[in-house]
Image (cartoon, rainbow over all chains, first blue to last red; front, top):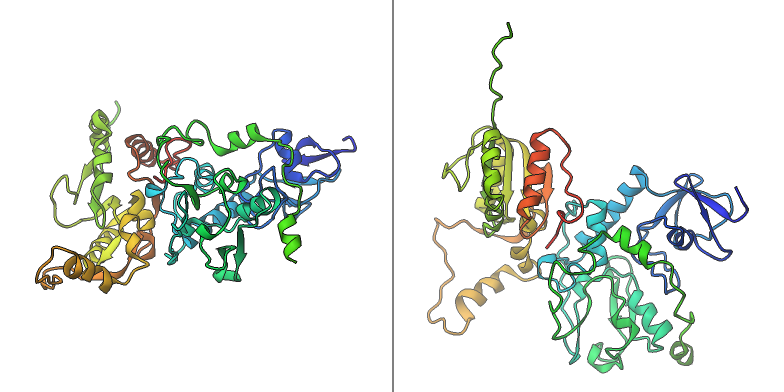
Length: 251
Length: 185
């Protein structure tokens, strides 16, 4: 084994110093399921779907720096069962009614469920009451589907320099909020061209008046599963500078 | 001389639709000409296709729709008590589906909106006949009421998904849908 490689399910994976395990794996054609990780943003490590077993201990591969000689287990029954349970809990916690969702077919959570073979949420559904925010003339916010991945928070802060979104509350009370005194999206400076408009992995942030323009059956995850798509998309150079000027001024 | 081979006993299958729209049953029929080989392997017990009113001992029970009223609970328990294998078919049976979209609302408010305050209703009354099953406070997916052995998601699951699932199950394999057949919408 050379200096800059580690083992992923027995396969040797080369890495550049500074890369995380998931970055090196995806770049080398080794798929590790993930949800809140996005190649263009700083790792968040919150969804834990990318959990792997490293030298006998579990770790989130999106935040774990690649090191020479690591023995990483990912595609095992044990780890995939854990991932399945995480996805099931997300489905049970929110209101994920795929038959009426404009994101169906383009949804990362749904595609992950398909690929992991999740046939049911298994748990008791919460059916929470989460009113939508339709205040903005061009954008709909449907909080029912939010999985708290913070991708919109990261995109709006790191790329758009606007910090339109944030998470508030703790535990079960944790929820997505809009950075305006009224709490309404209409009172922010979000624009359709913002990065935050593109990154929602589920159907929370939607453009109005384009619903189902792309027919069901011709969508992102229809031709091939997310495991194949993720490998084709990787690696991508970082887009965000890693900080938000707007936030720093406010502080 | 070989003993005459005994004809393989057909599996007995019951189906029903609870808080569903019969779309999943339509999708079962949508397997089209494959119904003929299927009927070589199974026979129907209680089902909208046979009009048998109560379920006897069965090998497989297929239940469409969620649980929205007291009668749904009785029928589901009848299926669970009689079927060796119980399958929840479709989004409503698996997640509560469309009927469960009322779950974040108060049931009384829903009934008044539909029967009393909706424009165009004069002297409206909330139906209260003792023959009518009482609605439940919330709509539930099947697994919240009885143990469910298998789930086929989809609204409805495609005929190909149903065919793959049933043929796997009947052949004794672990049913596996795979890409393109497993759908939640």
